[in-house]
Amino acid sequence: MDKLLERVKLETENISEEVISLRRFFHQHPELGFEEHITSEKISTFLEQENISYQKVAKTGIVASIGKGNLTIGLRADMDALPVEEKTGLPFSSVHKGLMHACGHDGHMAVVLGVAKILKRLEEHLNFTIKFIFQPSEERSPSGANVMVKEGVLDTIDYLLGFHFFPILPIFGIWIGEGPVMANADFFSINISGLGGHGASPHLAIDPIVCTASLISNLQTIVSRNISPLKPAVLSICSVSGGTTYNVIPQKVEIKGTVRTLDTSVQNKIRNLIETKSRDICSSFGCKAELKYNNHTPLCVNEPTFTQQIKNISKTILKPENLLEFHPIMGGEDFAYFSKVVPSCYLFVGIGDKFGDNHNNNFSIDESVLPYTVNFFSNLLIQLGANKKTNG
Image (cartoon, rainbow, N blue to C red; front, side, top):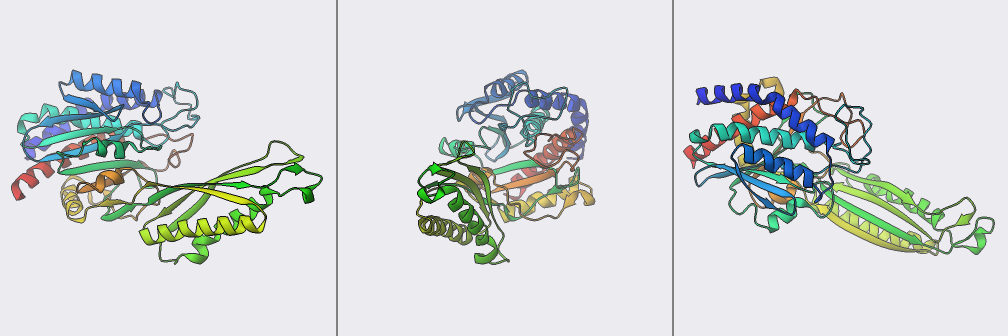
């Protein structure tokens, strides 16, 4: 085993520049969910060059496979970018105006391809199967993970790993949480309808803007006044749109927002309060409210027994200071659909805060973390497969 892991270290060093190059290609060619055609073609070409078998699924998704044996462990990477105009100034910045890899998925794909290349070279030493899942549409609805589940991608997988580069953690630090690690992520929109009119004669109109202002203020009291402070919850209004000019009271205003929770009962309570407050407050202004509420992704849960095995193996790979303790994150992740089907573990790999938080137009990755993560997951999969075969 020691010689095999030493081989992993050497192979990682040999392909580090290639992994960085892959990340830069993906970064330069961002594509939205289920539109990842250039991305999918690049992955397919790479796999063919490495003689790794694969199949296309979920429109633009890919599942590749190496190894042999009844035990199958999966490693997932998400593929899609965001509708963000890049401002990094990098020489490999996005060539697609208005689109950007602002969340690190470019790095995720490069890492998983690197792991696949290394373990393909060591395939004769593997007595289990590894599936590399390249999943479309993590950022937008419908969820690519949910589509993959429905298409049977997990039917032959016994255990599944996923990960995310995370700027809040120090670079090279890895957090492996047990139980809930990412929140239920709900989206909602409320259309407030009134009666339009002249800005100089507000008494002849039913003003949806004033109504909306009151509704927003009231919705923001739900978490602070209706939910226990011991129960994490977030309610954010992220979009307000209505009116076209300075002297016309509009007919309608629309607000959009998100709710994040770690408890289903809290999730349901907040939804019910949004429905009640929208109806009652708008009615008090003479307006009508139309609520659309979408449970976008469920709670992402790391199965405790499997996660503990991952932690134990990680202690043999990482320096003690790089195995971190952290807390559940209120972001959402459609890996949750996978974790509801098979025992799963979703890890967070620190990249430091040099480039700011995910989803901002200056986001990037310290590329030294790419080979580091390739080495980690290559080691982890080899040891995990050996332990699972030994312990049953």
